[in-house]
Length: 202
Image (cartoon, rainbow, N blue to C red; front, side, top):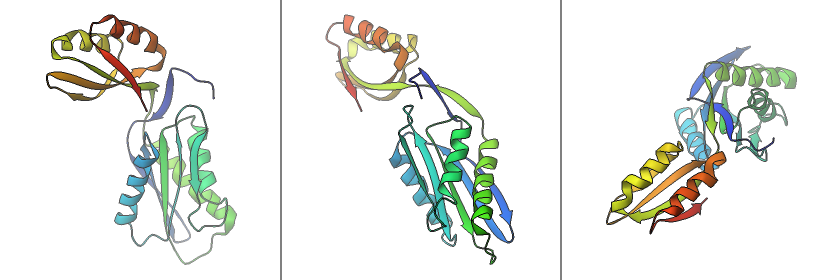
């Protein structure tokens, strides 16, 4: 994937259900920013569905194409995680995770049946949530005297920066996501201000 200023992801959490010969496959698709976001969601779903026999998943994060994971969670190798990841990739989206849980229905589906079930459940979950375009953001912390609040906020607004957190004391600190393709402009403008320090954060 080439580095672009934007990426596509899903707008919100969605769920869908697929049944085959008594087995029930429930897919949960949700937007994530980090692997930790994913782990938290997985814990929630495991807690909500303790009787599910498998919690298979796949996710992709970031725009370089290298940050992804998939798991068959005890299903035959390649029968669950890969088909789920395949659905994320076929939509060209990232910062997206899908967990598909299975309630056993008493009949073996075989590997082709499983691939079909996990693929369909994942595809159905993605069909019911809108795909949106978001800006690739680099995160910065900006420290400044509170008298400069208006100047700093004006620059952030002008370049569509996303304010992540905002601490107001005598000295203020804002964490902001700066659109990647506008970073040079934003940094130049902020550095023109007196006594404003800007640091890149991960």
